[in-house]
Amino acid sequence: MSELEMMVIPEHIEATGDYVIATYYLQTGRDLDIVKKISSIAIEQTTGTWVAVPEETPEVREKHVAKVVSIYEVPGNEYEVPESQDKRQWVFQLAYPAVNFGPQIPMMLSTIIGNISMIGPLKLLDIKFPPGYLSQFKGPKFGVEGVRQLLGVYDRPLLNNMIKPCTGYSPEVGCQLFTRAVEGGVDIIKDDELIADPPFNPIEKRIKLYMEAIRKHYEDTGHRVLYTPNITDGALKVLDNARRAIDAGANALMINYLTVGISALQGLAEHPDINVPIMAHLDFAGTMYESPVSGISSYLILGKLARMAGADMVVYPSPYGKFPLLRERYLQIGHHLNSPWCNINRVFPMPGGGVMPNCVDVIYRDLGLDCIMGAGGAIHGHPMGPVAGARAMRQAIEAAVAGIPIVEAAKEHPELQAAVDAWGLIETEGNGIFDIKG
Image 1 (cartoon, rainbow, N blue to C red):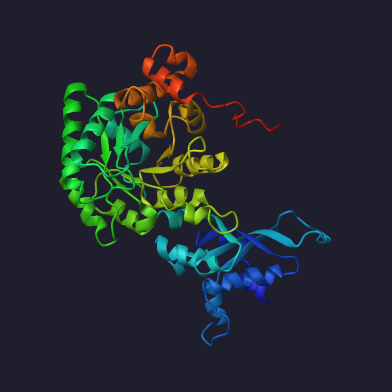
Image 2: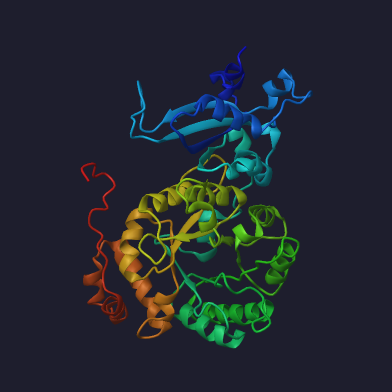
């Protein structure tokens, strides 16, 4: 048996579900031996090193080496490589024996995109998990259905507010801002990712004040609100912070899961003491996905992996806001979070970063009913104040669900009209997903 034959995965083995299949982009020089290159990657990430070692036997390779599933060149040169083409681009797939790393994310990522993340222009595009492997992950405790049940809201997208300014204020000032947003009709309020437990705004004091505002509001209106305090900290402190937050009254949590580590999110989601929804914040993600030729795809780290780890809600960039993200990537993230996926509960996608009333309708058309509109400045920076800012967002959501253009809805709602006057409209024509002519 040749080396390539040993490395190629037979179809009947692929069907057993014993392999996790990774898809990569690779850029090479024009004369590189691509079969040798990809075979070397497969061995490097499983059984081998730069020199043969005695215990790397054929039997060890057969059971533990990654298998080559496919190699494609883009564009698909057939009989020659044009003289003008000094670089070649490849998409290839490797199947990794799940027995090598088991049902955990850190070792799985160490295997799939560990050392090879440093070899140059290579990017991890996607990972396909067989149902048998995926069944070993519990995923979100609540997900879309559970969060909706807690809030008692089933017929519209949810509204989240990020308190602004991001940091630097006292619990008392924060409570004033919090109370105004609640009064305006938000469903969820999250801490900004830049505030956790600083001396000028201790988390337990903040939680007690905010949750008392929620209690009073519920008694007056019957409207339920979730508050997600930021429990981000060192890995050994996160669980303790979560317990402290819940003991202080928090009915949800938020974590900057990519700076703490994705396994910290999984640990929280699977812990029996943590029986509240968890919001996963995206910060730090750009260091992983922004390069088109290296790193990890945005829809993998903000989509599949966050969902596997147990997030109930995931914050990620809106293409209509202040952080650049291709619309197709934002749609892919939403798809990976909110489509049926074996045993893993569906997760709320929450586009944020400059979301305001003028883009509510297009986000609703993009993602459907089960999404969260994440608005910070559009609420606290509204010309008529935070109460009006929250009302304007709710008015935009209700108009979108009813199919009423925002310009028409604004005529009936001064808060929404003020937002339109302040920030204008966005061009949403041409976003039809079935238009193949564009």
